Image 1 (cartoon, rainbow, N blue to C red):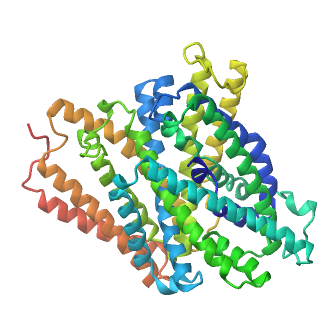
Image 2 (image 1 turned 60 degrees about the horizontal axis):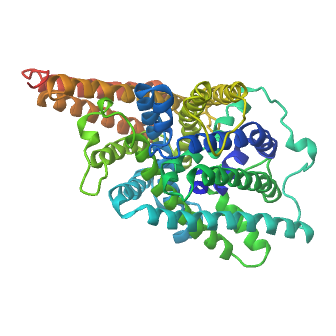
Image 3 (image 1 turned 180 degrees about the vertical axis):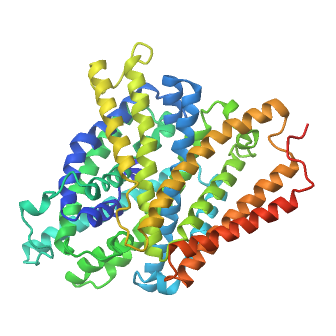
Length: 529
């Protein structure tokens, strides 16, 4: 289950598109200075808190108190949602390859239908979540994980077989210097590292399930060590193989979205089996994405709601249905994912939407991972309160704390650098930068809003009166209309300039606010007794 959340062939593609052959150097660097300590830190915390059911929420709550535990759970949960949208998009792209045999999804499906179909995918998974019991998740993720690992290994093996038969290498030069960065400390290069963190993290998502293991304190660390080995193999040999089949100096602009399919199409044609390998891989990718989607939705919800102090949450979010599932939490998930997809619709092409979501994940995912290292530092500072009877990463508490501090600092810095769009053109750079800032800020505001709403409920019985809720709903509707309008303007009036496009949007917002003011002129905002 855990492997599915950590690494896949597409993760290797994303970073190869950003850095070319230099990605191999970065994978080696990140493996020894990040992947190994990261996985062993998760193993340490999983062993220490093996009986806890909330994963990182429980770890933060135990080591730093209820308030920090809430914010850790909230931000960890909400920062998974862009990834949920990204995986839902990948499901549609996989289906497009199965149906049409190519990556020209833009010619078959416009931005609006792409968003609608992606929404159908994740909403279906959200509202059918009760069907995915632990055993179903285990079976689906086992099949998907083994199939993806097997296909990647097959790609690597066939690459070396092809080289032994005289297969020409697409990248030139293909020597030692081609794998070394030319400008290591440049902003454009360092800003791509956040996507490496996004590609390699996620091991902690299995933590809520560790208590179901026969001996979690011993077996979970073993699993994490195995995942580190598998990650090293896939990233290093996978990047090398991509350099054989793709010219790293002239990569397709849609490589992030379609590169994994192009790779198996190329290798299938080389070995004379046509598109057979392409269709086998596409089916594997589809199963892998569905497994990811199921685990992300289930595990992140468990992390947020399983061990969060209820005083920080509005009553609606703590409501459980007959199956013990947080039904209103799924409504909130639907609303946030829908908002992210609507914002992505502002961009001109599906490929731009896909690239932006990856950039966004390269920002919010490292920020959320910072809580993991914060919890580890807390556990090492108070090792007398949090003993690890079966597995300890670094015997010295002082050295362990310093390693945790190093990981926290590096992760935070890479998340900040990730705000700089890595795969944007002159037309989309400014909008991507604005969205990269706006979405994380919105997540933070929403995170602070939840305890505020809960406090209002505790003090007044309800958070807002009926009139206030109507105003809030109307204001949100105005925002959606404005976003859609801007998306229309940027496509219908591509040469009108950003000032004119945003000006028209501001006019719409002003009109909407005037409407809201008219509706509420005789209403009374406040709290119902």
